[in-house]
Amino acid sequence: MPAKPTRRGGEQSMVPRAEFQSYYGRPVIKPPTWKTPDVPAYFFLGGLAGASSAMATLAEIGGRPRLVRIGTLAAGLGAAGGTAALIHDLGRPERFLNMLRVFKPTSPLSMGSWLLASFGTLSGAAAASTVTGLLPRAGTAARAGAAVLSPVMMTYTAVLVADTAVPIWHDGHRELPFVFAGGSLTSGGGLGMVCAPPKDSGPARAMAVAGAGLELVAEQRMSSRLGMVAEPYHRGRSGRWMRAGKLLTAAGALGTLAARRSRVASVASGAALLAGALCTRFGVFDAGMVSAKDPKYTVVPQRHSHDHEH
Amino acid sequence: MTNQLYGPVDDVAAQAGHADDHPPRVGFLTDTSVCIGCKACEVACKEWNLVPEDGMDLLGSSYDNTGDLGANTWRHVAFIEQAAPRRELVDLGMPGKGPPGHVAEGLPDAPPGGQQTEQSDRDVRWLMMSDVCKHCTHAACLDVCPTGSLFRTEFGTVVVQEDICNGCGYCVPACPYGVLDVRPEDGRVWKCTLCYDRLSDGMEPACAKACPTDSIQFGPLDELRERGAQRVRELHEAGVEEARLYGEDPNDGVGGDGAFFLLLDEPEVYGLPPDPVVTTRDLPSMWKHAAAAGATAAAAVIAAFVGTRR
Image (cartoon, rainbow over all chains, first blue to last red; front, side):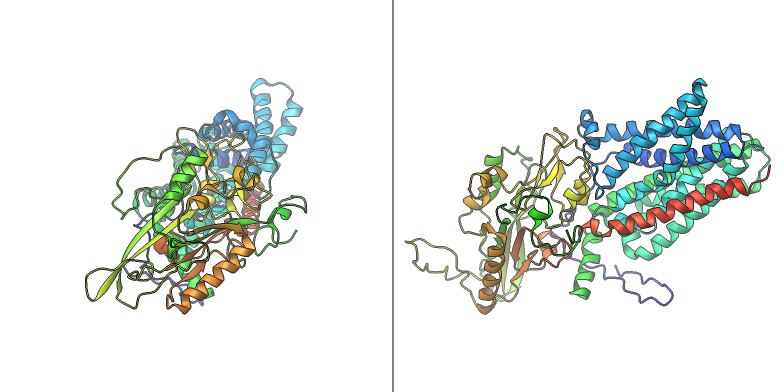
């Protein structure tokens, strides 16, 4: 099967040949042992919690109590649910506290564990204060503290997957944080649109539309830059997840722009955006599995770089 | 403390914090030109390290019924059958019987790295290689481990502490060679320790001890590198031009392997990656892009609130 040449203005087309040798077609690297839906669901919930937390604090500054409440609860619940999914995914869940045994900058999962522990504590405290009405000032401080960490919550899971030998994840490390940041914004905004009436959800709509644009553009750039390595984003089950993600995100964004006054349209668009962000996370996860299991994606680019650099 | 993530490192044990009087870095030179595929290394490894059985399957890939390295396979002998043009026979210097210093008569009918067929125009070349953990200078598994379970020993090797590992599985897709895996019934990750217990008692690893042809050679890495280069020169002089070292170069993508190989074909033929790179080389770039994406997301949320009228 001849490789399709990529066209990028000015840059030399260096698409490696698709013929390659392997050991009985076996994978060179091991696919992640991470389970579905635990890990992709965590990516979604972590991003949702991050964007919701940012939304809650800015809504507090801007005097929008409904979005404060929605964002605070979503951040607390999202972080709690994500943490539960992560612990469930461990081979030895009873040892989850070993994650906080060291502080290790070379491990995105170590950094992520400390981040999640801090963000989860703060957003959980803020949510508890919102639900019970107790200690409102401490609740506000906790909410603000979580919001400070929220940009990292929206993006660090992209570093987590990129820092592996999985070609489609590693090679996409420049764009993947933008894809995840976009998906976090669409899901946070989408949740605001589902839960708040249109008159209160203006900023949530703006977040959602901006996030949709960011996600779709970053995804497109990543796919075209990666060439053959990006194949799993377009083929098979992972390709279907990604297509569903794109369609739902685009439809949700268009719906958001078209019907700003209708409660029904707002809920439908918000739900589409949430579903789109979820599908994209599952798509990225699934594509990584395909990329790891097919030796082609490991051998062909490495053979190419080996032949051209040594 | 230079080259923490990438590039040559003079003293990996010192970089990892071991005192100056640590023993020299040790490793394996696996010379596939004299491997006879007896699998004594696989058996010795399993017996010494009490590694459970890994399935009694017939895989249909020559004499390889082990498949690949994993949680329950720390030495794996690969078998490759190739049709090759007939050519002059070469004495590979297989060990023979006799007192020390006695020059054994080479097997007179052995073609390079393989055996002869009765067909006049071609030989079947039979490649055999005992694969093992590479104990990389820059070990991605160690870099990404969030618990500190994986560590660098005073011998410069990389070992999993099973009483710490919580089975997060991050090291599994991080390894560019696909060495580590989770033992499903146990939940933790296992791999070659280069017989850490034996090294501590001044003994060589079980696989090297058991190897009847000295295909697996154990020793200080500096010495093995010299021995490997010398062996390649000898083979080239004998007409085995395809002999090459794999993983011995400190300037390669992982800073050189502690366990390197002499191969008779391209690495991918044996299931090895042609140009592996430690994924953490790009970690600074990953975080930079994540920071930019996080800042973009934060700006989008702020703009969503500032720009939305009531």
